[in-house]
Image (cartoon, rainbow, N blue to C red; front, side, top):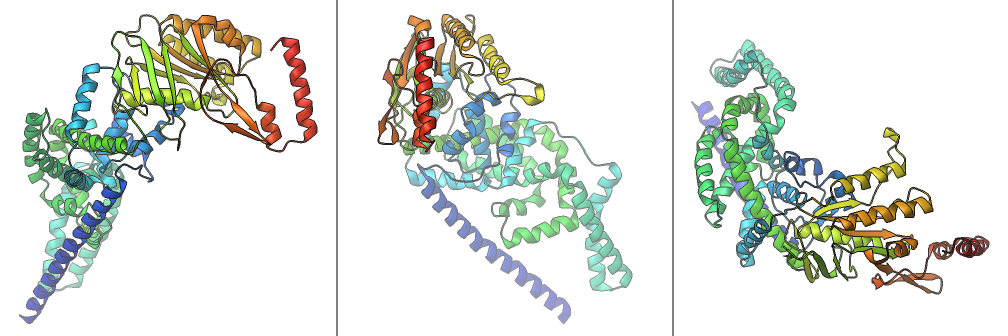
Length: 560
């Protein structure tokens, strides 16, 4: 009798100890999360991001208007995302990432989106409570929630294995009880064999079902977070949300044994989570979770998506407010519906600290040619135009004091490289890139293009480069596109005549240093600094002098 009483007391003490530990650990986690939320408001978050998992939701989208990998690389979109991302949950990260890569070309949709941002503009203490709730979905496992509704789930385990998984836990419990009643060596050896076998089976099935079993505890948290947020925030799809919450309540009841994990999954570093991982291995809880739930998940995929989008969008909208607070200055875009002009005031690049703002005013029948010295800022300027157009049509926020333009399709050719594996020269790769732009910028396109080209046709000789560039650029403006091109070829300005306005970025020489003001001026570049750069970084004096002499001879010979 004393033996059983002692065992019961020890077990009760362990359970009470775990409860007290989890209670104070939860308080500590909440306190840390709140401090993190307060510290990051209005500031970029410097953190390592797993873009493979972040992009999972975007990769499941096949609709039109998706930014290509080439354009994303040209605009450094992953780094732009790093700057914009102030989200608190993994679904929020994925939702924001997809938004950034799918610019909207519907005026009414963008206006509605801005109203959603404004609707969440509340006192910071109230926002912080919402962000705390969202932070419950900050576990890396929450990245896998999107997979629950992005694809149909198949039953991956053979029937005999499924039967064993269902009953092995009962057998282990029975053996443990028998050892307390009548301890025998046979029972002990069978128990050890079952435990070792279950550990092997746990790891053997893990790769097949890992994304599924990692996401199920997060699904319970998602349901809880969405339910709590729905009591604080009202949106236009509230009725659909209520229906989905109700349907998934039934699914949650079938996942009761994951409730404990869902409560501790927000902090996978605590002791309870480590203990629970051992229990999962011994009793095959992950494959059991898969077997008992896979059919039901397929049935409720649409409802899971409703909750995911609801939570992800709220997280994203608050993050956008944080971005606006932290910018030196910003404006909401004004979209022209009839007027085919672009007016950008005090525009800057969000990723460049203390970036010098510039303004530009242009129209579709007049392209913009940017000349400039090396390192003077011309590429940064044209890239800034594309990034601000993207931000305008995604997060309804621009790094300008005023942004006015039509809704546009973004096309770029900035970081062209040769493709040795496909036996393409640099010029071939560049020509194909620009051909793709031409094919998508015809006169019959409903949405006109913003076209950004850096150093057009730099991969071929001067005469053919200038001739080809002139023809292409004239074609693009003839088809009523906004065209911005940087070049070192000053002859292009004369050939393009009235079809293109010409601007330049220049520098001044201060002792042995080149000083850039990064301000755009009207007209053609007056100075070239290639040889001056050689001089400032310490090239031998004879090399520099000889280069200047040859340069003057070439200018006279070719009238450059």
